[in-house]
Image 1 (spheres, one colour):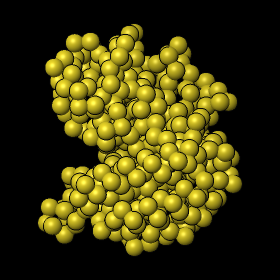
Image 2 (image 1 turned 180 degrees about the vertical axis):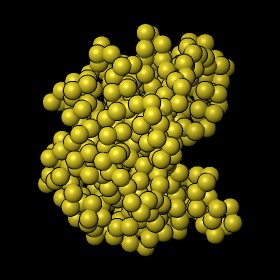
Image 3 (image 1 turned 45 degrees about the vertical axis):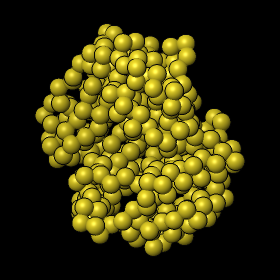
Image 4 (image 1 turned 30 degrees about the vertical axis):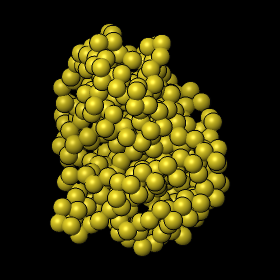
Amino acid sequence: MLPLALYIHWPFCKFKCPYCDFNSHVRERINHPAFRDAYLREMRFYREKTGERHIESVFFGGGTPSLMEPETVAAVIDEAGKLWGLPATAEITLEANPTSVEASRLRGFKTAGVNRVSLGVQSLRDADLKKLGRQHSAAEAVAAVNLAAQIFDRFSFDLIYARPDQNLAGWKQELTEALDLGAGHMSLYQLTIEEGTQYHTLHQRGDLVTPSEDICADMYELTQEMLDAKGLPAYEISNHARAGEESRHNLVYWRYGDYLGIGPGAHGRLTINDDKWATRAHRAPDVWLQRVGENGHGAHPFEKIDAAERGREALLMGLRLKEGTVLPEGLVDPVRLKNLVDEKMIEVGAGHIRATVAGLQRLNSVLAYLAV
């Protein structure tokens, strides 16, 4: 039986961050019991599609899952065990914001069955947190990380670099402070300006200036050097971990495994009778909730992925990993492939392909050149 990963999307936030293009919505009131029941109903629908499989990881993402009631988290975990089987070794992660209110709920999530927490710290500078639209202070972030370390054996936190007005020296000092917090896993994302966000509008007007490409490259290289020195090498383009602390759930995505997406806007990849299917749910929470009530699920019709597209998707995801992936036959132009090897952007051998350090730094360009 192929193992499964389970993703639960909580679509609500208290505030929409100006850089965020995720499927997140600000609501004054949320019918928690209705969403709890809907998650369980949609999980039962997917159980009919998967047959007997085992869930090896669960990930509560969003949105802001730390706004969920612990009772909902507990109900989802319990149902996953009943439907598919959930071994004691399963990784169960919940994303949380480090406001003092949400941090105070961490013990409740631990009791519910969560064994790993991922904190959206984003910055350790109050001025930058304000620019990013975050609702916590740097002091709250540090307190939340320290609390997570007391409650959970495994925890992670995120930081964003290449922020407006940020320089290399400032990032070095901030990263030094972050490393002192002692996490076994850190996600370090370069700020990208996404269409449809407030940041995109400001950037187009010239009211938001981000560091130059050269400075961004220097920040990336500095990040690799500093985390390598602390024993947290990159195992994926933006993710660093001590040995054994890698996110097992996210590795399923990057290794092109099967995962179920439950909740508004959630995507999935599912193998049924040797065919790979793409699944996606209605993005609007109210529409999704109504569809689940009417049909037992909020999914759009499944889309079959042909062999060529499967190869492209596996390559696209696998090249994000330091370990690389299988080189799909007939899907990569051999001339372009040779050019990238000559430029020391990728390495190829025995049917395997991986990006070099230089290639990872320029991965978007590498992928576009390969035309995946």
